[in-house]
Image 1 (cartoon, rainbow, N blue to C red):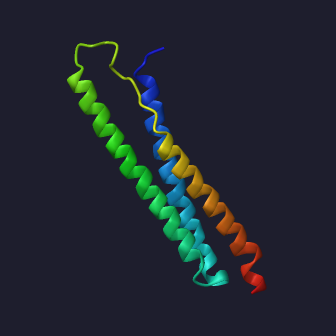
Image 2 (tube, one colour):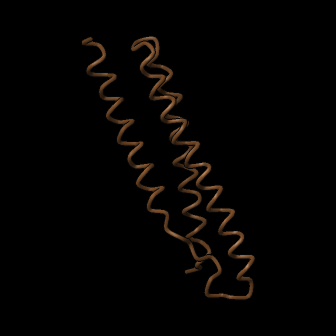
Length: 112
């Protein structure tokens, strides 16, 4: 297996995650007429998460490019990906919070 493919797949996965957050924020726009101003919080959280994914991906891409340029000629370092557990945990936490707030919006807001 080519070691250069794994970083490419990871990059594509982060791009899909960012796109999913933007699409989710646009879907929350449909809730504004029914639930008032509260879905704006969901929209903001989804867009901030998408921006965080984008900025983190740009940072990792730039760093990986610099490492590959510095290690030119060293086959063992070329294409080596670095884990970013913090980014995964923060994104997962944002998705959980969005889910909880979405459930709150649908179930609890109509009762108030």
